[in-house]
Image (cartoon, rainbow, N blue to C red):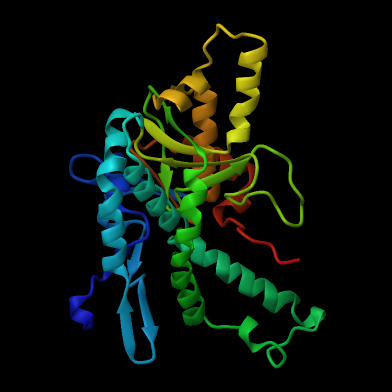
Amino acid sequence: MTKNQRTKNQHYVSQFLLRRFADKSERIHVYDKHVRKSFVTSIRNVASENYFYDLKVGNTVIALEPVMTEIENTALNAINSIADSGSIANLTDDCKANIAFFMGIQMVRTRAALETLHQAEEGLRRIGPSKGLTPEIMPNLFIDDEQLKKISLMNLQIANDLAPQLLNKDWIVYRDPKMQFIISDHPLVRQNYYSGNRLIGNNGIACEGIQICIPLSPEFTLAFICPTLAEPFREHQRTKIPDTEIPLLIAIDNGTPLDLIDDCVIYQNSLQIANANRFVFSASNDFTLVDKMLDATPSLARPKYVDVL
């Protein structure tokens, strides 16, 4: 494949996701955390980089963009049906499998995922000599940007392991009746509600207590939550209020959306802002929450994804 045959502008957040937050002309409101400014542009111009998925092996360029497009197309109809209706009640097992694989790819395909590798490599360069790790002893730990990109693109195969973990979660759709959900350049975010070990963390998708969310539109967010989070509600219903319906459990069991109060919507949006590598996207030009969070914690402008101790 020649350079002229390859797609130049390659998206690491699917345009069909961004399109839900854009107007009819496919223009979207954008906030740049690095410079703290907002602007409006086409979805074609955001969450993308030139030849982002092109992998150089010797003198050969392997273009992975067609593979990304094929994966997106496989899950497109099922995800759009959720974004249209807020319902997951009628999803087939095949549809869920396609969505889970797409989400696994989306989790590891972003600029933030590549930045995580950069931060790890920089950390090794910083502390390596004090630990006896030098380029002479362990040259594979000290690599250049092109090698980091190769590792990042090869990590796309991790989606095969991530998808089953997502399928094992309780699936739920959150709804904001005011349609205020926002999305970012790293849209699949994780949060654990249980305390974890400071050294090993508790943010892995297989960790007990994890919740993984991705906005599908200003109205709907799809969440994959650890079943242990719902179990206390089920136990309380069984033992204390057997004749009372609990909205969370109804949403999980019936595949219907769960309406969130304003504070919960703010929390979901704050996760997008905190985890965004640089850009936050919205259907409106209200970025008040982004400004408040950056005023309180300026370091969020350039998030730290990994610490090397």
